[in-house]
Length: 285
Image 1: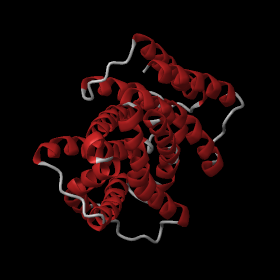
Image 2: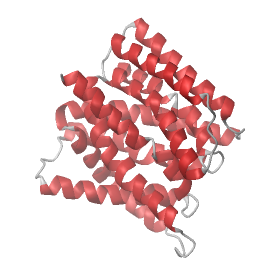
Image 3: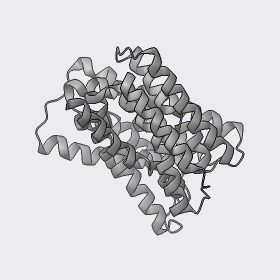
Image 4: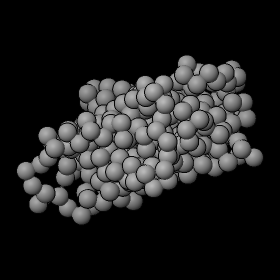
């Protein structure tokens, strides 16, 4: 039952995260990547601090500060900033090529940081799923420069580490507490960056760009992690992490609906293949 709850929570987290890249793509049309990254962290940190205070959560132990710093560096600062920079050089559809590698990165860090030992068959399903997603997205995406590709590879690496480290902490502290404390830890630095990157004015910022900022601040930066870390902690980091293979397809659908980016009919066949890979990974994780 606990594992089933973990996979259910993980799926909700993936659905929420699926809107992150399209929302970021919209938001960078009105905000600089540096301001967007810092502002979303500060807004989410304020909400997280209210939750911690309202529910009277005890402060984390000193030994938890290092792992929380890793979480903050990976998912609060690193991934949002690197993807925002990358999306200045590529479409959100192309960025999904690299998101398809995130489950594999998360599984690798689950071994090194979480002490998990998936079976060899699991790695076959995980590798096949990553190759399917990346290959499909690569064939349908517009060409991009090396700068954007390298930024997205770095984003995947730091995010995989942040996911695995946060899930490991969530087993003891709780999922929403981990992301809330990580946000609080990074808040002073991110507030300073936000003030330094403050734009001269907001007259050029349109409604959709404000909505993009709101989405990545509230949902991508806080609410999604409540479900995601809970899912990873309960269902296993390596196994539940494979649900991220579905994120590109949810993201492609949102990119098509919100940004008018084309999605071909082959998406349904590839989605079916990915679902089989996720099911196989779940069985052998």
